[in-house]
Image (tube, rainbow, N blue to C red; front, side):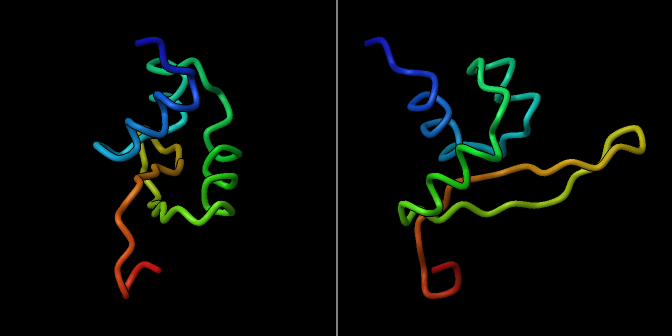
Length: 71
């Protein structure tokens, strides 16, 4: 089954934390923050956290099932 890049990224967000580098390398998408904004606007619950590597800070995202704490 041939999934689109966005569908592949969405599926991966449900299984692991994804950074912009992960999205680019694994899905060919360089604008993960824009996709996350679209999905949040559509009602999906996506959490984020700051990460740090070699002094650089960046966000990682993960799709979660909504609960009373995340909705």
